[in-house]
Image (cartoon, rainbow, N blue to C red; front, side, top):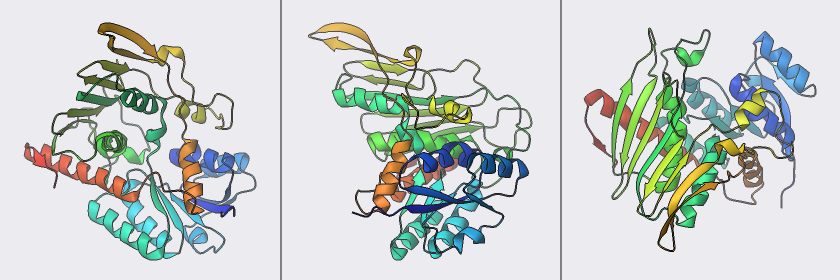
Length: 353
């Protein structure tokens, strides 16, 4: 068993680095947060105050050329993921890419081949596999209480009617827009549950005044006996359920966003007791039958656990366990996104080949 510490560098320290990565690298045993690359004064000040033992550097090369760095996180704008991940792999580093993996499937395939050639771990931060709602949904599905599924709806409903200033995610860049952003989560979850669909149909819109990015989508993934609807928008002041799933025996509905992001943004740390536990007001509702009688019950949420991604990553690098988020899985997410863009543009359904 390999218990050597994993020395880690972050390329980027915006929201992804500050909220979703650095706190876990700091608190999950086995990692050392060695270096952070950022040139933004406010980010430098924050990193220095929270991680005084971490070196703040101004260039990517300062991380890639450091022989002590084992693992590199790519936490930069989407269109830079491919080139930076490629450079990190060529430098002999294990690599975590924030979602979305890449802009195109051809870029993803090239990185997968390179990682295999280099003998290095390559993975993507599909952290929404470890939210309270998705973990609870998986438990409900495994119980068989819904029977054979016929319809699955998953949504990320937001209300952001204005264009956020100084946000690269609002700019018309390769891989920008809500489909690449939130769609990467919804598609990954669906593929984890059901595998690749037979067909993809998409409606993608630009709804806010003066928006430069797609800010609404509705995807339909068609399976043999199941229809999957994936939806997100920025003008949904009253959000619907995160999950609404119907089967031949029952239905499950779940409202409320996972609490981990809000806690991390508020400066809480994942080592706290009862981390990821949702309030009872967010627990889901299961309607099914028991001994031939209809019953409705509240389902207590499983605790959210983003830290599980990092524990798995540590142990996979140590050679002790299989990688949870395989790069091929995140490549398939990009394939669905590309088909969705074509479907919306050409106004037709595309088979998944």
